[in-house]
Amino acid sequence: MITRLKVSYLIILTLATISRPGAAQSVEAPSIILDAYIQEGLQNNLALKQESLEIGRVTESINQARALFYPRLTFNPTYSVAAGGRRLQFPVGDMLNPVYATLNQLTGAERFPTNIPNVNELLAPNNFHDTKLNVQYAIFNSDIQYNYLIQKDLLSAQEARKRVVENELRYTIATAYYQYLQTLDAVRIFENSRNMLRELAKLNEKLVSNNVATKDAVTSARYEISKIDQQLANSDKNRQTAKAYFNFLLNRDLTADIQVDSLLTRSLPAAPPALTALQQTALQGRQELKRLGGSLRATQNAVKLNEASIRLPNVYVGGSTGFQGFGYTFSNQAYVVGQVGLSWDLFKGYEKRSKVQQAKIQTELVQTRLTEVEKQIQLQVLQAYYELDAANESLTASQTGLANAEQTFRLIDSKYRNGQALLVEYLRFQNDRLTAQIQQVLARYDVLTKRAALDRATAIQ
Image (cartoon, rainbow, N blue to C red; front, side):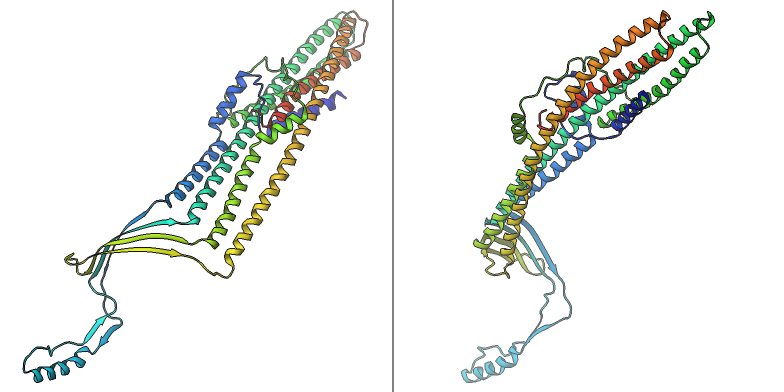
């Protein structure tokens, strides 16, 4: 029985050190040391830095959307050189020169030119420039307005996502710290047990030398010491693994020392409020809901954007000023052009109507997801609440069991030293006490972990 329990204990510690739990920490702040580590993790953790970069990226999208509200000013010079290609040919000389010659004969004066050339110009202008400054300004554009609102909603959703990651990190750091302290307590328990067995071996050696006991009493004690040494080696390995994982979360050197709060487990968290109150707190504070709320507002604005593009036109003003002509002379080449424009898609194959319907479906999808997450959160709070309740009951039972095991072992130890108990009885009750100590440590840290899980589910920081 004791062997199976020790193996289970080692498996639990190993899984705890390699697993990565989920999300927030207790508001009661039981440890200044732990709080400092959590703040360090929030500042240095690489996953959280990635979320900050994502927020920066979305913020730049808002700046880009805001820029569309301002006028657009562009400097656009062009210069054309052409050779060959199509020509514009018109026999204006062949048509007018005979007529003008006849008129000159009738009037007796050279009033009309008779050497007008025919038109033969390249369609592509050669040595032609257009150096201008353009300005455009959207007086009314529903796409620009709603796109800006959508980007703001997406930023709110991204900020909520970062707070979700912060919650996850708080919980992960707290539980990793508890796991590390748990491995330290395990090492301490096994070391104390080994010291006691060594004292037993020395006692048995004296009994054998005095012909009070046989030699198997010494070998049995040494065998028990070897088993404890194996368990102690595994516990030390788990301690190093838990230490490395905790430092990884804080983005520190994996072998950096961890400050131990020896008072952390002496005062357990107070009893939580009622279940219904915790569920309401979770629905108000969980960042997952706020993230979905931002996404929902974005889809609603997408619906408005597509509906407005059907009903309303886009109105803009603009203008150009510059120089235009053959050769860069800028002499008598200046010009100014003003524009007022309106753009309205009257029919586009029902494409916009389809986009409106698509946006409405997306809105309904996000709304359904929001309702589902609300139910999931309520379930998470309920599960965490009753798991904490069960952990507290288990801790009470383990404390009672440890007290009984300690008392029984003291009696057997006294009897054995006085020759009133067998070695097999001593070893059995010593193992029972070791089992009770391990159970009590596991139960105590389980209470802290379950309370952190409840605070995570209710979004308490």
